[in-house]
Image (cartoon, rainbow, N blue to C red; front, side, top):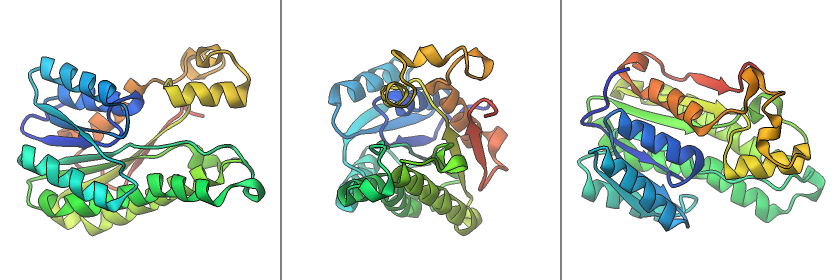
Length: 252
């Protein structure tokens, strides 16, 4: 897979879990990386240190991307430090609380939708002007295989991920003429802090790895699996992919 040298990536929620793995993989492939985080400054700083150790440039930026004003400040800060934003990975996410629609708090619905649907829209809107001026742009939406099933007791999350996939398909058509590709990576259960909590709450296990034996290929997927799919889409090997989705669930 070809190098990303000379390109700048902005990864939301890039300090931990899937976002961390994506930031590190893009840096390993040659990109400079802006790492967004909301609360865990230490984790984001460690990602920056690891990227710098590869000889790449990186910087961490605090912002809650569910607020347009904070997104605008974030993008302006990144563009002040880097020449452009060539790759946007909309990864920041939160879980819903597992309640049926009848019992879902309206505040939870708004929080989840703002994070999964509003934030990617805000970020895309803000990066598009500079991205259009670049030789190539890539926007990656991190969705979920939840959209394949729309399981009970998860309407806010299901709705948010369905919305971000609709946004991706819309952008793929709108921005193609500007050389911008928009694609979707949709993980299943993944070895992260959120995945660990989900496994314990919904599967009744002590550890997410208790599910390895019954998972495809004998293991639960990892953040690095997700990062590899992102790396494909933004590489020259993936330059003809636009409006596409990879479901990372080992085949179901």
